[in-house]
Image 1 (cartoon, one colour):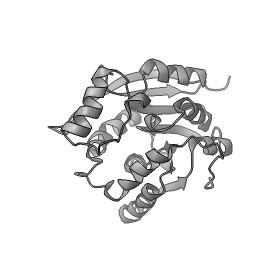
Image 2 (cartoon, one colour; image 1 turned 120 degrees about the vertical axis):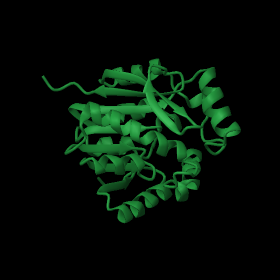
Image 3 (tube, helix red, strand yellow; image 1 turned 135 degrees about the vertical axis):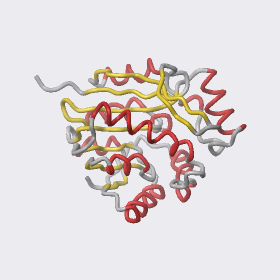
Amino acid sequence: MSNIVAMDANVDQAELRKFSDMAARWWDPQGPMRPLHDMNPVRLEWINRLASVAGKRVLDVGCGAGVLAEAMAACGADVTGIDMASKALKVAQLHAIESGARVHYVEGTAEAAAAERAGSFDIVTCMEMLEHVPDPEQTVRACATLARPGGWVFFSTLNRNPKSFALAIVGAEYVLNLLPRGTHEYAKFIKPSELTRYAREAGLVLHELIGLQYNPFTKAARLGRDTDVNYLVALRKPAKA
């Protein structure tokens, strides 16, 4: 997969600058990405339980500095990570050299990747990324295109309601300082009904919708029925008849 970016790339330059600014401390478990480190084992276990990543071809869309990508590779997956934040990708590549993780990183968009490698991956993950692009529906379609028939597509994002605004923005960014201020924009949050509609229109079939709760005081994350703030969606691409 070459480093190709579509001319009409579904990219918000302001969002890229945010994550580039955090790139150097991405792997610091006490740094600005601490919640991600705390939640990653729970997300990985969920993905692995449903799709069994060992030996599978996996594409991690919006991989950042590679926290999930490396974890899936450690489970035996053949992982490619793509992102448009070049500084974060450089950190990912350097960390992989240090850790010995076998992950292939590419600078590019899901849409450009879909044009090159449609139906190439057993599993496509896109975690905490949809709320940072101008057109999330376009990204969902690209992820669906990238999955092979019978393959899995996983998303995680933030619900849009007063509770998520209070906890994910006011609480996390301004009160507890878990994340840098301005990390999220409430208007870009996505309701589960919207995401599942995007997925259905892209030809994906819903397998599971589940909430992810995070306690910033105990640093504990767990899955549950509450999808009011963070939630995850597992979908499958129908096998060919």
